Length: 503
Ligand SMILES: [Zn+2]
Image (cartoon, rainbow, N blue to C red; front, side):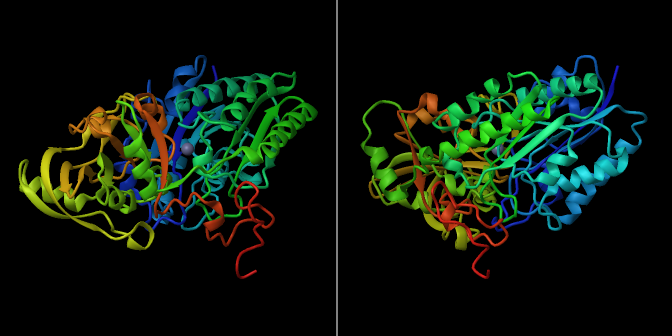
């Protein structure tokens, strides 16, 4: 029975985020499982929608040697200290694992550190330094990986999520287990192919619940059907990353080089042919709020705030959408806004108190100024609750002290949910756990770009993607890249990047 060392180390890095990602962020990672070493790393993942959990569930016929699991909410550059500490522990445990036949790594694909533009390639270099150049290393990746040719060569085989919202994270880990078993039976390295697309796709155009994402991802199974192709995947990529290899890439592997190349070329061509079909789909926040209030129907209108999506590394405390709601006749709720100071103020004042609060605005340059409100404190929580939606169901969130506030101002009646640890609102439990039930509001505004669709679209009258300032720019042509490879188009049919303003 093959002995397989397994570990997870996930981070999606927004190089424009106005704060770093440090070691404590891996200890309290919002709704993700917290840092763990050894057996606990796989015990806590078992049964959850995370790749490591899926791999463990599908690893029949393997003896697993658990190393560690580390994940943080997306954010700014991973600090040298955090990266070195986690990779050193991973490599020490790997060196102590005894004789092993393979390694499985649950990685993201868009990690950038203080020192390394391609965090995952550096993880693989450090792991290869322990296990050598030939030991099979299977990797599963997020759909948002910004993958490099170097990285694809350091891995032996890879799988990637095929849904956005990512409801198939565990399934992707399970596919990695099957692929690794196939590779071990094959007994020699797979043939591989790696391709990069020549335009960047905006996050708000990437949902697989919309077109063309739905049909593009659905086409993968057919491309993997020919003999000699074991697996093919592509990653849409993560635009807010000022790195050379930012963007969409295709990876295929199998036993026949010509077949693998043909599959990768066909997928790349399909992506090139879909260029006209991607739509950023943003409506300016004031117009989005007005339209939401005009929609007929009993169900709430869901307003997304994609440019302040904590799940893409933005703080989650931008105030543009809240300002638009307070300036209109909105009956709505917005959350979760990352605001530990106001949460603490509400906890001190107690339920029923009126407080004068400054909401959000820690990073006014990217997300707008704090907003002064007079609010009633409606409900408080410690931010610990079980998630219930399709993506995070079963995971225990730890948002720290949270508060539900209510602001009545002019014709507006706006409920604000604030919390202390950053988290994307991709699960209704973030609102429900503190008594903000979506069905009680005309408008429900969420700090999320796409992931909210999995749990919120089924209860929505309509979904509107609003546009207000934030650190996750969704119009690619506005992103101030300096390190991107020249010749890439900034968005579908966008201008060609020429090497930066200084080039
Ligand atoms: Zn992702």
